[in-house]
Amino acid sequence: MENHTIVTLKKGEGRTIKAGGAWIFDNEIDTIVGTFTNGDVVTVHDFDGYPMGKGFINQNSKIRIRMLTRHADQEINETFLYMRVKNAWEYRKQVMAGGNDSVPEADDVAEKVFPGIGTTGRPDLNCCRVIFGEADFLPGLVIDKYADVLVVECPALGMEQFKETIVSLLKGVLKEDGISIRGVYERSDANERRKEGLPKVKGFIGETFDTEVEITENGVHYLVDVVNGQKTGFFLDQKYNRLAMQRICKGKRVLDCFTHMGTFALNAGIAGASDVTGLDISEYAVQQANANAVRNHLEDTVHFRCANVLDELPKLAEAGEKYDVVILDPPAFTKSREATKNAIKGYREINMKGLKLVKDGGYLATCSCSHFMTQELLAKTVKEAAKAAHKRLRQVEFRTQAPDHPILWANSANVPESYYLKFFIFQVVDEK
Image 1 (cartoon, rainbow, N blue to C red):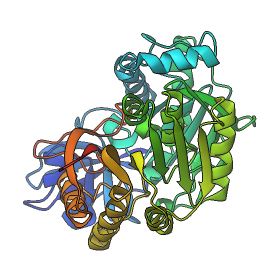
Image 2: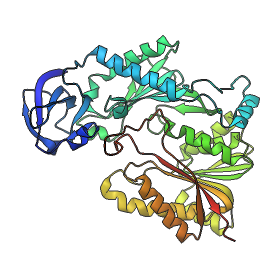
Image 3: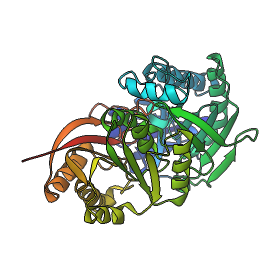
Image 4: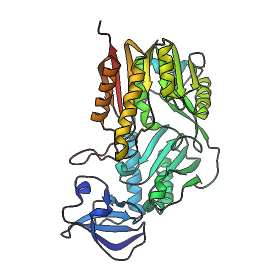
């Protein structure tokens, strides 16, 4: 709840929020005047008393305050929350491009398999991230939409008091556009909750419902398990990166590493790849991927098997296997700044092993989902891997996360908590 506590920053501190960021750390605070409970909304002043806005405070966390507004006179109430939710949804309606305009063959394939599914020109809102924390000015809250189901992740104490109100407001905003939500599930089961002094939570918000949800993305159908799937059930952030790969994979032999539910592999298959293999260490993920291949009538060309990618790639190279396209979508090798050095070694190794399997003239797609692995650092690491593999690369394009995961810019740099996914596509150039 909101109270009249005033938090004053030390002189020279608050550089992050002054530059456009959303966090105030514990060592930036000089004084706290007033009585509060962790999670309350407090007013923040600069060292000289200048009001800087409002945010919720939590003394359990090194991120002591997460800012909600830059206007200290703005009341944090249901009207304020409705504005934030409405703005977030209107933004998605504008930026989520409809269909496969740049890849007409994908629509053609999808239309043959699923008559009437053609999506060109329609807003792409069947599945998307509706609220993305700090980037939507609702810090510590993520809400994903999977067809007619919402999945909520709330890792911050301050958002606990607001989350159910926000869910109710969001359902109302969607209903204004004729979209009915049949159920809401919470996946606040990440370890970040512990740092906030919160228990992990996993369960229904409101009535129970069937938690296996069918979604459509880029003309591909998936069955999403919002209870047991990774994160909130599915990785929505790679949506348009998967679509970009459709242009490259037609008629090609493709290897998709760390395939999870088979997302890149199935996009390759629906675009007309001649043969696709997906690898993942999780037997559960492979089962899901194979089921999704059948769901899309791609089981004859897209196949999945359980394997440790780091061990499997050298075996494939030793067996003389070569691919037209190799896709590397590994989990984050680092979730802290301190572990970045070891992560660089991991990214270098996986890219070197992947490059050895790409035919001359073929393509490598490689990415990192850690915000500690910057674009420049990932590029440098891939360059080192190419040198070690005796391969020459030509960059096709660089991409980031889909626009429903917007990157909030500050005055001096991107806000790191909102910018994490870097995605390169390279051609392996024949030097002969």
